[in-house]
Length: 248
Image 1 (cartoon, rainbow, N blue to C red):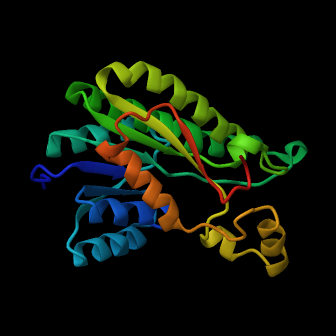
Image 2 (image 1 turned 60 degrees about the vertical axis):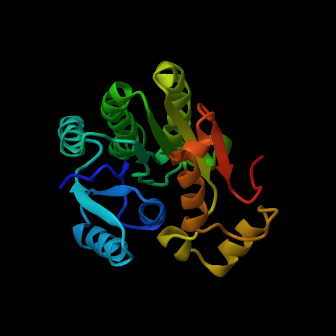
């Protein structure tokens, strides 16, 4: 149903982790949030129920960001239903760790398709709506790995580094229509992935972080919320790290 003049934000990969935290924060800030998910509808529904129980507004929108035709269809429908799309948060992503010499073609294709091409597809369709409105904010969730690299994550690093270069270029293209494009690069954040690490692995990671702790999805969501709001109206084409100082 229409958002009744609330600003509208689409968050991809919003069923858990950083995406879910961003959806909760933007809903709290008064946005009508559109929660995208690829397969886990039940988990996305649970996040939406939490948002509505707290007085927020939102809806679910399931699609695979790597499917160009489906992305075009779904984002066009959001624009038609609500008459606007103010914020896009490209959070959907996967990683399949592998040393380069063992990297499978199909795994490389999956990573590039979701982490890079998916964000490009979504940005392309959202920008059509935002350019007409002459306002909007596109926020890419990349990774510190795209800045500093990491052994065993060459394909993931390539996708995230590509997202940074893409975003800088698009920020220049869209700036004259007052559409801003920025990149957030999280470091080690407490998610399902970090929960699976051993204590020894966590201790090794913490030794590389000057602040001495892992970040939380809420830390990232707070930064994303700032970039979504008009308070950041003069920020575009920037890569903003949120990593406790592990990469400067």
